[in-house]
Image 1 (cartoon, rainbow, N blue to C red):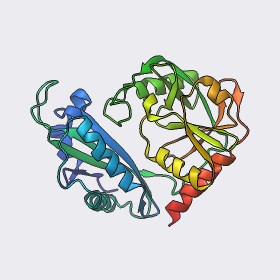
Image 2: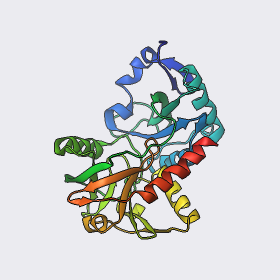
Image 3: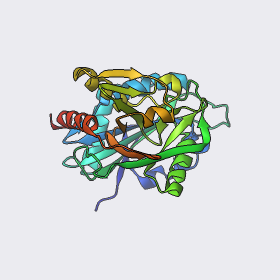
Length: 285
């Protein structure tokens, strides 16, 4: 197997080429970074327009300068180049773009210019799959997520998600819901959360501190196209216990059906299946 390839500031490189920056960059030292995870399936780069827009909206919040070449066409070409360099063109892949502030300095940076690294990892499936048994999920209560301008961003500071994932393993569950500073459920460890009640699809608003997920926006569009009432409202445990159906989403795994939250067992997964089928139709095009 050939050596894995990366893209660093637009150029194809190997891991050996990245050693010099591995310990000196601000993403490693301070979490001074943003990232996007993008799914490549059936020769399609899914939702690239949304990913580029989210990245370019997030960078000014972190006072990062947006390079003039950061455009849809640029990332389309570079992702395609990376896919071919790693011989993944006939497979599915997870693409991660990490954008981090250049330079040295301590907390105060010497510049607000950015570098970026792009990497690709093969995925096993072309389409989104509904977990046959459903997921078992509980609450992560050790740390609360603050609500501020950074809460909706995908930054290099992921400690709360790391700790929630460790907690999930300790509880022997498949995932954990994260609580915000109000004690409300805002998201899972790597996903947005949705509850279905009758013809209503509900999710916490961004003001509750959840990440502004790419698939979150797609779920809203699909719900409205199928005459489902899409509502943004704060979530408590009671919201989930009272729901007919609960699922979580991210761009890599798609909608994931929750079978159990604490003592509540969910038998229904019809709406989750609807979203998966619709998203898979997008992949097929």
